[in-house]
Image (cartoon, rainbow, N blue to C red; front, side):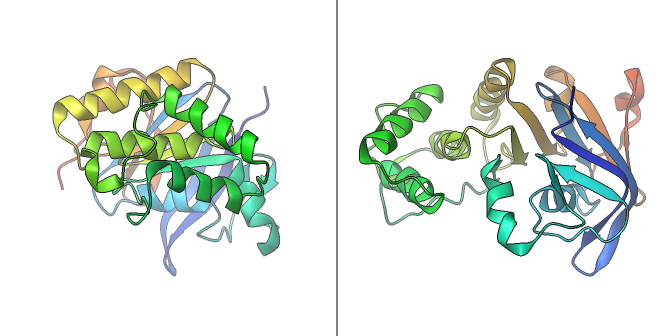
Length: 233
């Protein structure tokens, strides 16, 4: 099985400084992977390297078939179309409806046919249980509903993997649980999930592979290693 995302001996930058040395990580289709650690430990920098927002200067890294070391600037949009990204703060366009938010992304990534656009928007809204919210403005939605729209946006171009950076960080416990169940459902349907979190209860309740960032390293934990984690801020 060919990995969707793979790093070998990769140094991860945060700004101009190296925050993680020698990252080895391989993510396959269907994997559910947590990247955990304290605030500032380099978790988000790993996601930004996967999306080519941060450069990879040392080691090897491939994402969706693209070599991050030789990736040309003009090819970065093509890489990002193969990934879906979900943020803690939703990042919806507040001046337009849910439907218009999703249409904006599709047109920006090359979709032109009106019928195909309408059909794809309807499909992803149904996938996240928001099919009745297409004409709502973001401010008319709860935080959990906004995050579901953000996940629908991430699904638009049939991504090979969804990268979720603290997707439940701004949500209450019950709403966060609903978002986790939605991500698990998408994973069970075949989409790989890479989720950044420092919330221990999440990865203890919902099983997955766990990579821990600490002391400028990020390593995969085995068996009961998660019980020894210190994720305090």
